[in-house]
Image 1 (cartoon, rainbow, N blue to C red):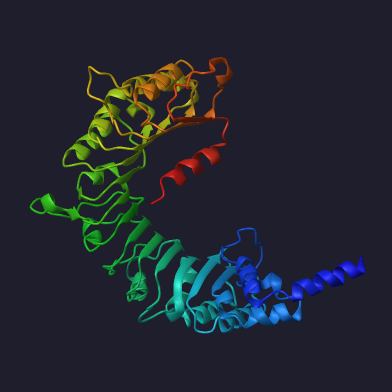
Image 2 (cartoon, rainbow, N blue to C red):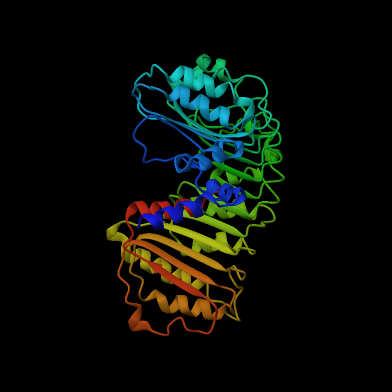
Length: 441
């Protein structure tokens, strides 16, 4: 046994440096660890530095392994965190940094100010920044001034609201970021001086206004978890918001009608549509100009779940390839959900004597809280068979439902290359996460 261990140690110690660096790179702490329950500074391949003296020397003398810096803050004394943070920053040399800061709890921390100020003193090296702080701790980042020349991606989450003039000292933060491509903020509203942004995401406490977004001419992905405030005069409304580069959007239906985005191909409607009239308004917005959408997702409240109204939306999207629907039905409404799905599947059947609805459809996803549409499977099978192989994937997700497909063996064996996936008895958390994952831009 002892001889085997000695032999293993020799083989490990004889590995070429290039191989060691590949191993060490896989051991880096690259992502925030939600399981941590104490204050910590993490980054780099910490686990390998104690294996042997050679491994430690190789790891510590390779700056590229130490460019991920995670400051995990809890309401307890910070102890030696400052020294550990300083050591980590020194190990990375002058290389660009990926910084994550997480603040848990609301208690004031005696060592928080110097830790944040030390991190901020290296802000000219930040390439990626993901910062979540309470509003009373965010003030410790005011030392970030001037140009952040390397910053490409920033996510800022401020818990709590900084009121009125109290926000003025922070307006200079992150203003000069010539390389910034992606900016996401939750909570506080930020100015948007970056003309070069490619992705912008906002979940603000206060609604954004149209003029806030007018400079985002290069944005390709836009996520707005808010309804925009119409701050244009009647003379300006014909050209309210023109985003010529926008390709993917997560936006409220009411704002879609005021958006001119000729390159838009993927659209996820924010919130849920509560009435049939709101579905008609969405159809009108899509019909207002040439529609190039190839992917669309909609969340329909049960009072808005009308196959006729939904058909109007689909008629406006002749190039649609991906359709995702979430139907909000309660337990006592499951009969109506089943009936709607049967009607929807029937409208998707392509017939020689009728204009085809979304003839290029390749992927159909339906999510409903509770549904037992066994009678609808035949109409779904007919829709698949009628589409000559174009429809390649159908997915149905539900929290409550029982499906016995064994009794319907061969129903979907039409010879068409279509995969039918039915997932039921999902937990509410799994159900919600699936929906959110499908709609990320």
